[in-house]
Length: 125
Image (cartoon, rainbow, N blue to C red; front, side):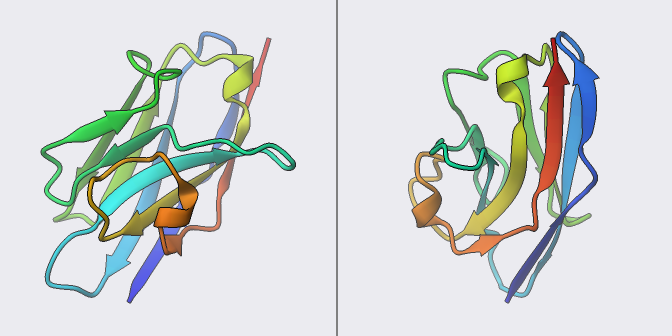
């Protein structure tokens, strides 16, 4: 069983930074691939970052490369997303997701079974 819960997001001006966290409860002998998906009502978007179970490999969408960093601490059961140089187009509800998928990519939300409740990120210009 997997339970995920994002921390509170926030509002920031363009160029600013935010850090999202996702607390995890995973009852399994292995750690799943985890990812972050921004969602806007009525607009389909892929994920922005993913990290393998051991934290040794990461994936980033082109739109966030060099600005976002995904990390995890399996000992503390946390998944983080450091977001720098934020842009108004980054505004969305951000969800953390988990599943035992390979390859570990944030290319399609349908590949992930377990989801947090979402947290709002708003970037103003």
